[in-house]
Length: 438
Image 1 (cartoon, rainbow, N blue to C red):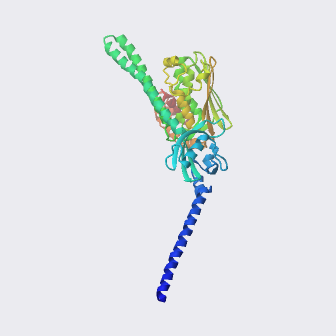
Image 2 (spheres, rainbow, N blue to C red):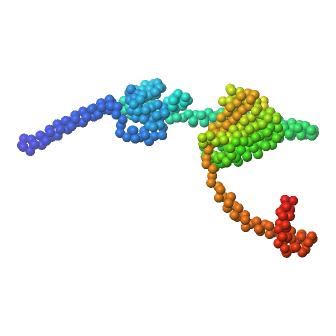
């Protein structure tokens, strides 16, 4: 073999040997990285940044269930960096995903459980936990609080069931009364009796439908109109709406407390909420008694208190009076035509305004409902009346000047001499103004 062939052969052998050595080195490096990854508990790059940007609670734990990284939303669930998983359910889920045990399929698993959010007085929350294996020793847990969603769904089911049940009574009564009127067509007195009862049932059905619609509107996700609302106007509107009910029931409604307070919200919704409390107080008060409405501001909170001296509410019923269609006294509710939705509307209306409703009651002594709303500053509306007065000043002479000829025309019947004098024009305006209401 000549030198050229030997050179080429040596070069080929060197390439083969070099490639083999390189392959062994690469395989060794990969094996080392794989072994390091299997035994490493270091959080991969970028994971912490992703966790801090999440709205849901999320943590990364190792094989000993120690939290290595956590989002800010995980703190209320006692999931902090350096701590451990607080419940056995979380540990079981994380272990099952990592080892493939406990029915976990693949590298992810989801389970619904109840976890306490906050200190001991806090109620357990319904949480959907999704576990994902990101390495042989690291597991990602994402917690999503679904308590409100489940509560809304349960409320929707109960609401539909209760509504369908409550609507059956007036609808059935209307149908029966219509048949009774048809059968008693030849008896005018009976027709009048059945017609009056039919009108009462129709009014009850209309009231129930209206309150159902109002409650549905309060529970909707749409924002209520927000503006500065005068509490004096809210209370005055509620009292005017139930003045006839108070007179017919022989109950005196007394208003007291502070004036000039404002809150931020919807005046119509607040008036209806206060009106429902006033209507209940009148309905459950004996004839000759009084219902008191007090208003005051305490540390930035406006309190509207409605107090009656009625039958009161038993302690066992006080936690349920704000439920839909619940009646503490069903017999009285049937007599007064109550729908069982008034207090529920009050509760949701106040909650939509960022407030709360409190109840104090003793059987035989009466009840006190207190609406607490965040106070807002009074609007700067002083310039508005001044502008209105300035506009009216130039109009007043025109209004007075118009009747003047009429008055002047009537004066020749009495005296014709003073028609052109100034004093005659001034008295002429007064009879004209007095004559307008007549």
